[in-house]
Image 1 (cartoon, rainbow, N blue to C red):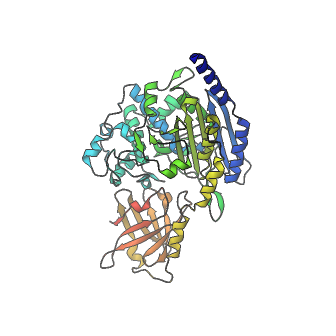
Image 2: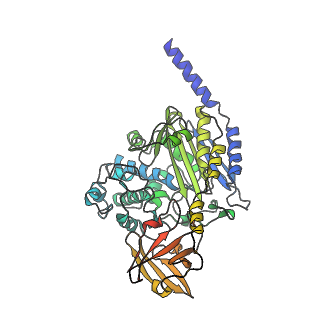
Image 3: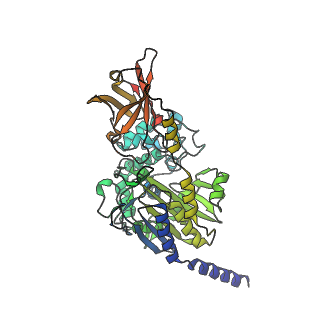
Length: 505
């Protein structure tokens, strides 16, 4: 009798999962896209090893008619990290690497915040779970729009300050995934991009996916940036080639559907075992747990704890495990969410910096879970529109400006080369009567300096940047009014110029 009851319950459960109205989901996605003013997006849903939906919505570029389809490419940004972790797992399975190997066995120059003991103890596993002691996004200014090589980026990371003790906290760090990419290069003798293509992308027939802006095909979405003054505007693709192991993959909903089905099937797909189940399980095992605030629990009911595995975010959700990751690229956001117990996978790719991907993923997941069937998009949109991003920070600086002041020192006293050990050289020169600031390793950050007030100058960037607009530098003077250095103030939540303290050489 008990056995019969169990079978009946199983049939009812399976039946309830099948009763999902995909056409209604399709309409919901399009309505949400319009509500959020997202130019274009692509969504894929996989269930039980089949593609339920893979479709484009909207247009590749605002104001144009070229529509997004399921093969249109978008930056997946930090969803690339799972690919890096899978490459590592493959190498461990092949006996070419061990999770407990010290990073310095492969990268002798690897150093963290001047601590020799910590630097010698960091393992390959540590690189992939954000517990080395660096703060969230700290040091991203090293690689952002930089022409440095991955090795140069990692060497400069030695000067990023310690945020918490080794293995005693959570700090989301792109730098350590760049280091992981270099470990793969050292072990295999080829760039990590070549290894992931050969072992995952090519056999999975992810034929449209690329890992460089230099390889973008015609069917590619244009990045966009929401602005207060001009609405949503197109911006140029930014190269993430050097930090590609942290977020450089550019893919489509169709290709990402194949990636999710392989992951949901224990690392096996179409008769090929990409990662053995033991290694797959390790990637989805929490390695670094962190506190969920009460507000966080309220915003996503059904979860009680969360953590990070190896390249994946993990949490409980309505009595089951959810495996997910977000991605933020210049002008593009993405979200991958999987419910392994349901063999359900969702990917949302967008071509603007609006937070639509997370509520869409939760809405779809909940249709299958039959839980919390609320209007996630509407709630997140209301919350998003109630925030002003960094506008308040910029407004505060605008209102604090003192007009009709003069600098203490002449422009000629500012001219020179300034060095920050974390970043490198920054040159201030005079061109046609104006002060120019040049970043030696990142010329796309170059700017003109205009007097703001006293000894502070506004940074007038040469090109539009996704993460920041307004910024200033102030002069650091000695007691004799000689310029010793400069300090940055560029309000934003990702690229921390304030970590730089360039001194005159």
